[in-house]
Image (tube, rainbow, N blue to C red; front, side):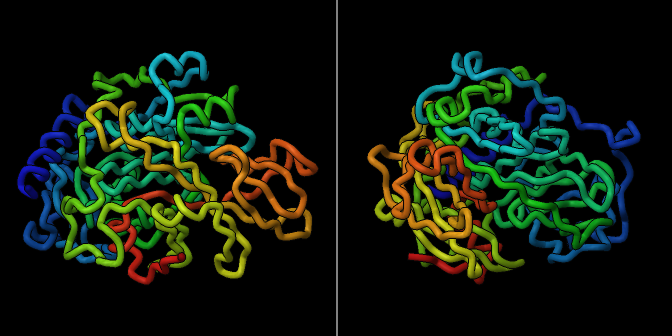
Length: 390
């Protein structure tokens, strides 16, 4: 069974990468050359075509392995185009998942049906350069600022994995970056970290309702891909083995149980399993002494279940917010409608974006805490000191 899954994933990754054109570096020159200071045996993946300084690294080089496609074989979207909700409604439906980033009063949705074929979008939101990233093998969606040390970076896919997670590279220095930890792990910028921006997964129906004037990433990407199809069908079965994981998955939860995670340190995180959130959300808690609440909407579909993303079973999505507002700490309970919440102090009603839609606090907004929904095996691999709550 494992052999079949691995073969299917390799084929899917190859299909996802077909037709991509390697991007030029910041000076417009093509990639070439090879750093000869590290042997092929040390690294475990090809160094051909890389200008990366492989002598600098913060993790063992033999932890990297090929995911199938070559460098930029899964092409990042460098010139994203957007359209309004009404236009996007022609190809998005119901509980289908979209990644959402709000910044400086602007809000953008990135459909997972597009992200599954590209994994990285280099974008600018409210004048700020950002990258929205999605790793299908870890089911992890992370948004970053692209500004590091006074320069603006642009990211592409290396084609390599570490503990099944997307390894990105910046085109300015060709340093390699780990998506889940937001840090450069190989190359000139080793040790640098990207600033993680708050983001969340919403169903398309929720996004339409909460952000009717928002923008949506268009299918007009410049690439020919079967958007709407899922090349990883069936991969998210909770007990199925992960692809390209070094070592055995942490047995505390099924490998592909979805969890909401808040990073609290370089190797630590607070983790809320979806199996608990389905029963108990909203969860009132404290994260590093800060009062926080975890909201959960059970009516969000999986992008990795059915052959068509729109047909994926409902798995839910979470978002984490600070629950202090105006000098007081709020305590939340479920609202009358699924995906809505009520604070006990004022009786105000809140939605999945952390906005009060009715009651004395109408119009107020909770501060979102950066978090990510992902598979447990991936979180545990990178954050071995993760603390399960509940």
